[in-house]
Amino acid sequence: MIKVEQLSKSFGKIRAVQDVSFSALDGQITGLLGPNGAGKSTTLRMIYTLLKPDSGVAYIDEIDISQFPIEARSRIGVLSDAQGVYDRLTTRENIRYFGQLQGMNDQDLENRMDELLIMLDMMSIADRRAKGFSTGERLKVAIARAIVHNPNNILLDEPTNGLDVKSTRTMREFIRKLRDDGKCIVLTSHIMQEVAALCDKIIIISNGAVAAQGTPDEILNKTRKDNLEDAFIEIIGSEEGLA
Image (cartoon, rainbow, N blue to C red; front, side, top):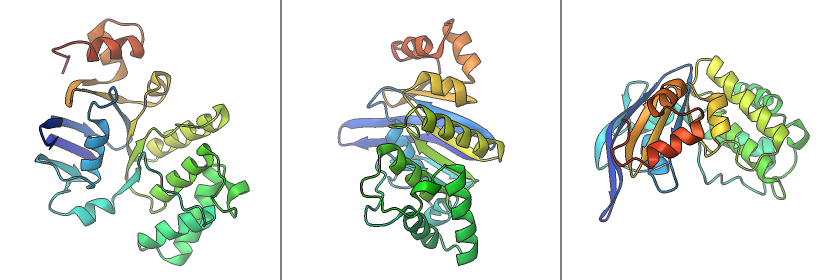
């Protein structure tokens, strides 16, 4: 479970995030939405301890990320917008390296790696060096590395970005399986069809603050719209929002 209470972050005179609060539960997919520059990425970076909040607090499974950042990190897997796949390493070597960083023993690591290669349909590239991989192939490697240690909390920034139709379907099925396994998943996406297909709860951030949150049906009811795209535009275009 991830719980965020009044997180704020400024860069100079710019208030990137202002008193953001929400919770993401185990066994659910929570969508973090907003226009470019709204504060989504800054919020995620504070949750996974890359940035220190100016104020407020976030908890990973009731662990205060500011007081116990190392323990909090061990309980999360992160796919950020900077994937950083090592070109000179094979897919297996990329995944294995991150598993070793997480302190996994050799047998558990090899078993988990084989499981992920099958689940993400990567057996054909398992022993190829990453240099020359497509965007979709690199994305799959990055996700496998992020969750090799089987964390309970998973943060995914645009998890289907660059994937073709078949790979997108595979990725969505994979994310649903993580949810069905009881994982807490927070994802960002600009694709409203994907949000509608995956998310149990939606948090909409506009101008650094939470403008609305609830289930997809609750968001639609609040805006009196027939689809999430129209509801999203209605919310971010409203000066007062629907928080």
